[in-house]
Length: 261
Figure: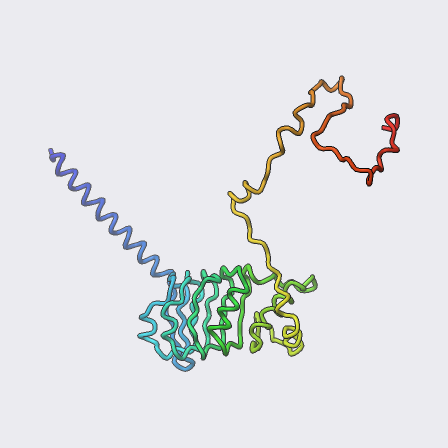
């Protein structure tokens, strides 16, 4: 009969082997989900989408330093560290990431296009100021599907979206396209006149704790002196209140007698 210690050692070894195999399978599945890195030498376009990264690996710049168009869509990017290494970058695509208005942009004088669709940008003024300071020659900007961007629905009231466009154009008058729509000269003229006055700031949603604190319960004294009676004996009652109005300027009810009640 096999000793218990030997059986225990065999069990532990089998469990360890099973755990290693499971981790290897998970890693292989993870690698299969990641899209390949694609670099087009003719256009100097680097596509690094769906890589599950939160920042730009320095190795990308080491391998593709001449990149002019960088597509980082469908990642978890919340920091643009190392993007300043791409000194020839003209177009930066950050759709479907975790970008907020707190992002830090490096100054990039050659950048012409910035796309940040479907991110987490809530504070439009703060974000636009950073864009203006970091990308002085920007020509194309898209912010669709962010909290800061109103929903544009054809044939319905589009005043909020138009105010949003004019506000951005008042800060970035060199834009040629905003949210894939060409900027008209009439828009630029109106934005110059009153665009800085048109931003509509939406209130921040309350957290669960803030909602609880925002609801004030009724004072306990409100119905303290009322006597509860059965329904068949109910009748109107007079009740003294702690607040009375003593002024002769508003006496509209003095002509209503008791028999009229």
